[in-house]
Image 1 (tube, each protein chain N blue to C red):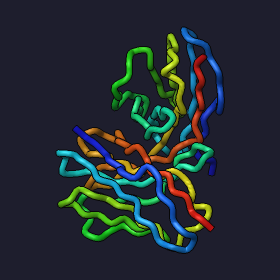
Image 2 (image 1 turned 45 degrees about the horizontal axis):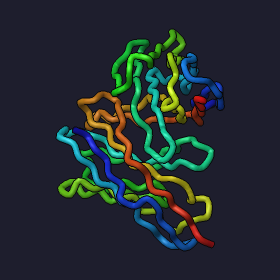
Image 3 (image 1 turned 90 degrees about the vertical axis):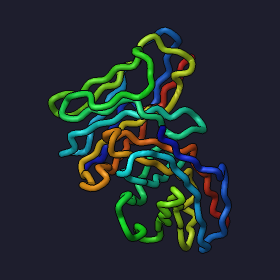
Image 4 (image 1 turned 60 degrees about the horizontal axis):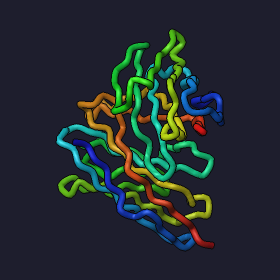
Length: 117
Length: 115
């Protein structure tokens, strides 16, 4: 089975532009999450979608938006790009849920590396 | 507030030796999951091991084990018999139940295995 796939793998944009990143979850996974990883830091939570509804949002400005489609794939959109948006954007999908802790194991894609000039 | 702390920016270990990567966490949620991920230079986060907050026994997965000390709020990763392919960044993460499936990650530890 294919893992989590993300596209594009690398892209370069200039300040003020808009970017769309795409993610296809593992077949059967209905939850998709987006994380931003700035160089030298751990990933930071941006969004979680489950069954096409937003279930969580991290501390990111409204320039960041996302959606999930009927086939559970997802898009992350970032408007009015800033230099600080340069990062690795990771998509993760999940299925299993521990009934005591409620925690799901996230399976990550290889990421989309965004450079803003 | 939820927080994960990894105090070792970089670690070195001799091939075939064991190494412990430290992780402490802070949460007021009684139910949570603790995770370790490996991130090679390619960028993909690879799941290694999981521990639920109510698990009585420490988790083990092959050469990986998680030393879970709930009272101390620590979840250290032990890698036995280190291999050259273990050289990577290692991230500790926590997912409290009251935040849905949001993961909080530490800043990571860079592990280098020396031949």
